[in-house]
Length: 387
Image 1 (tube, helix red, strand yellow):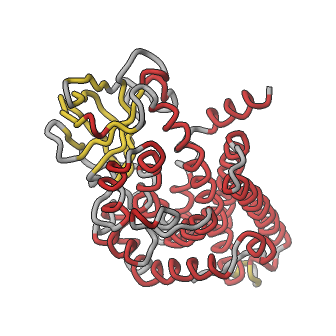
Image 2 (tube, helix red, strand yellow; image 1 turned 45 degrees about the vertical axis):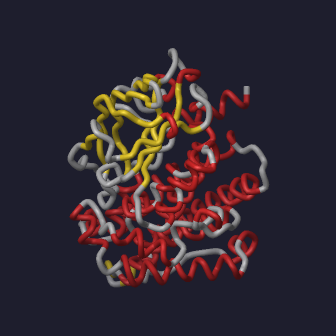
């Protein structure tokens, strides 16, 4: 395990002994069940399906969800502790794949009927089924209001036609929380349906080949006259856009956490390497330029982490943070861009070689400022709420 950089005061302000117990449990899980195999899973572009059950058995999948559906209730910092320790796998793809339920289940929890919650949530939290979210389409990503996948009412069913792309866990998902067009153009014609993968007319592409996040299976999903029970509609018809927007706040916080941890681990690897690597008769940390670069990296990581934690605390207290979480995501991604770049630079040629964590962190980092709303969309949200 690499040197671990952290400032105790930052952690003590937000995390209690109970949070630390959860953190230790997840870290032990990563050390035993993930780290010995993660390189192979990266090459395979997926991890074993049985890992969902193993993660569920130690409480990882259910953290923060109601007990009545198989979860373990807790504040936002319990989920943050889990997310940070999952990132210790060194694989953003593994974290995204195992955690795809965290963008697929919340709309069901917030909008679903009791019958829907009991049907679609417990099997996922138990690791028996995999849940994914289907928003992005081949013809558009950031323009959520322009969704083209249609769902036409036919008695007690909807007939769904269209496709989704860049779907994390899409190859193996058993259920898809899916945005469809049930009404006219624009945001007011969108609904959310839970579509089960066994539905006739539902098909999945081969794994999409990505620059990073290799360990997560990513797919395009096609709907050809899929008959989906109307009972699977979440909330009211044509009101799904609001459910999507509610979901984005938590997703953006999660991506900020991932970015901060990506940067933190890159810094840790850089500290460890530069203390050992010798050049011109002394270690790299013997050079002022190296020490100052590490100091700048550490400062940026600490500032971004503190900002994200403050936003998380306010979200946990029920304070609207739409503008601030957009800022936190952009800031964290900018810092991670810089720190992973500098870490690779400090490693020199080795930083460009597979088998070194900084190489993977550098690749995995790139998607973070795109997923959950691009940097440009975040700035549009921020500016609209400012002006």
